[in-house]
Image 1 (cartoon, rainbow, N blue to C red):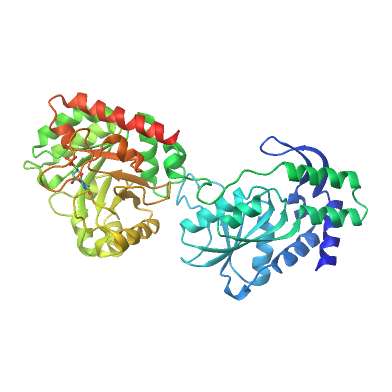
Image 2: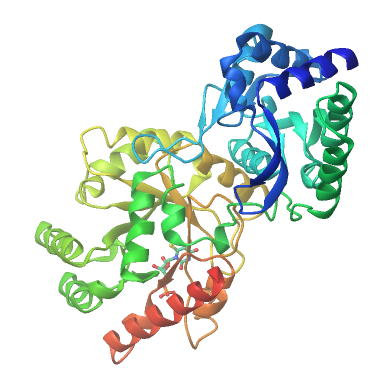
Amino acid sequence: MESELKNLAVMLFDVGAIKFGEFITKVGLKTPVYIDLRVIISYPKLLNQISNILWKLADDVDKIDQICGVPYTALPIATLISVDSNIPMLIRRKEAKSYGTKKLIEGKFAAGDNTVIIEDVVTSGSSILETVKDLKQESLNVTAALVIMDREQGGRKNIEDSGIKMKSLYTMTKLMEYLQEAGKVTQDTVDGVLKYLAECLAPVKTLEKEGNDRLKMDFLSRSKLAKSQIAAKLLQLMDMKETTLCLAADLTKADEIVDLVKLAGPHIAVLKIHVDIIEDFNQDFINQLKNLSEKHKFLIMEDRKFGDIGNTVSLQYSKGVYKIAEWADLITVHPVAGPGILDGLKNALKNITDERGIFLITEMSSKGALTTGDYTKQTLTMAETSDLVVGHVCQSNIFLNPGLVQLTPGVKISKASDDLGQQYNTPEAVVNSGADLAVVGRGITEAADKLREVINYKNQLWTAYKNRIN
Ligand code: S5P
């Protein structure tokens, strides 16, 4: 293998894939060596040789289910390996599509598939770590990263510290040695490159610190990562209106709700109601809410907490007196019945053209709630499987996916609990615990000056969000 690697190093040099001189890297730093493996697509034989030899680094080939290429340079290499080994391939998109499914990972896969990442050059390791993160988000199991060139600037450590085995064909030291032996570079060039590499280490990054930290990202960036279109819309309107307030208008008279929404509409992101507590429910009430939601740009959530088998929730969602599917942008769902509940709800949307979304009740705010342990964990997994899910109703930062929204109830500036088990936290505390949207009910509905309180909550929540992302 060593003599093959030497020959290949010379060929790479000869086709201009390895250059020496003074170059500027993509982060604006000077470097005396530049590796540009993109050129190898113009040399099919070389491309094939590189792919073959890279694949020799793979362990336990019969246990590998997927090969994932990191765009763009490594894609043709991964393709050749996939064709040759007859192991299917995945592509990680650089950005989610702005239309359709918004998938980040293209290709067919199953949760738990063993996946090997193919990459051309590793400097800090961040491309591989971002890829690992997206693959893990889809419950894929990353077993190794196979790399052509390790620049020896700290990337290997970053990747291995994140628990991923990395194997490379060349380290920069070995490459320089081979090229010097072949008379392609002088001792001065070798010294210059090695000195540079020793001095210019890439920043330390690990999987946890890398990339999409939900709590540190702004809503607009996160909207681009959302699988659900209505989640993207929600994140965008929160950014545009500068509000994370979800008003729980738990009043029992239609007119009282409409009057409150007329005041609060410009300041809220979501209006949440319990339609079954309204004594004089009628279609005109819904029409008024829809008009206000269009005028003031907020979404309407029916906090129905569906919790039955698929067939029943399908009927409850679309039929009966309330016909919730026709007007509620968002609904809440107890995942207790298992994934069939999501299929049932989707089934009810066959004739609905507007975007609809679901918040799963993943953790409840009330004292002694049973939404704990495995139940919560399995709900998190369930959310990743459906593009109807907009986010989680929960009390703390229990999920990573920045394309999902955390909605947290139990928010009040002054009071710590009510007499019926509800537990409250302050706006700042819930935002720091990961709340993207905060539900405020009686903190506003029972206030003497409701508009003042709406604005007060909105401002306190927005300030806490701004502090959080900064
Ligand atoms: O865990 C939960 C989930 C929800 S959706 N705890 C909650 O309190 N809620 C809802 O949030 C509850 O049904 C009510 O509509 C609102 C909280 O109202 P508040 O008056 O206690 O602020």
